[in-house]
Image 1 (tube, rainbow, N blue to C red):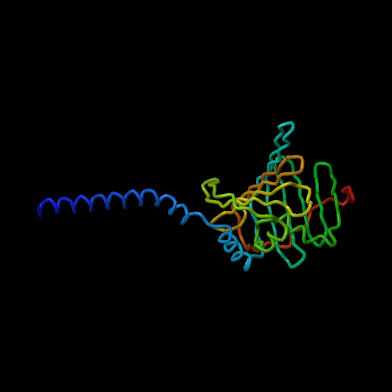
Image 2 (cartoon, one colour):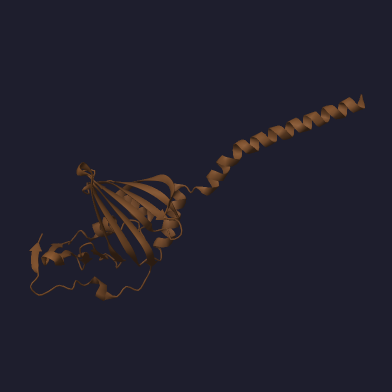
Length: 237
């Protein structure tokens, strides 16, 4: 009788252990996923920590413009510079391949210089400097409040891009901005943008990739100057 009771007890213990093992196997994947994937609030906290000390970034730039209706792809590469200086942000996109071109935002003025046609287009940004930081440098040292003020932000998961683990955010402009959406791939090492996709109202889009980024680099004033000939053709916009 005692032997039968022992066998029964052992059988019950084995059954309990088996149930526990099943529970662990069922719960473990979701537990690991929950630990490995950050919530949107946690992502905002990471970005806010960077925003507190951020003042500049420079990076290599790869730019692709896709015209969807004709399936036309235009690739270019160069440099990107951004310095936050109060309400007067400084931005420069300097394309060197395949054709030289530069976009400069500095001292309340927008300039687009095209050496191949010896022309510079100029426009005043008076009263609109805040838009520069909102749209031209999105994901570079902006706080969560800045993002939420101008966009509806959705967490779109995680992706590995070029071997880098990134957090993906979908941004929908709250006000008409000439484009439909912005998708950001935030580098989980630096918590700034590694890649952007800006989709226009026509569904054409820009894909911008920022590599070899140097945060808070000392960028000289000379970077924010355009080396133009005296006879350059100036077109006011």
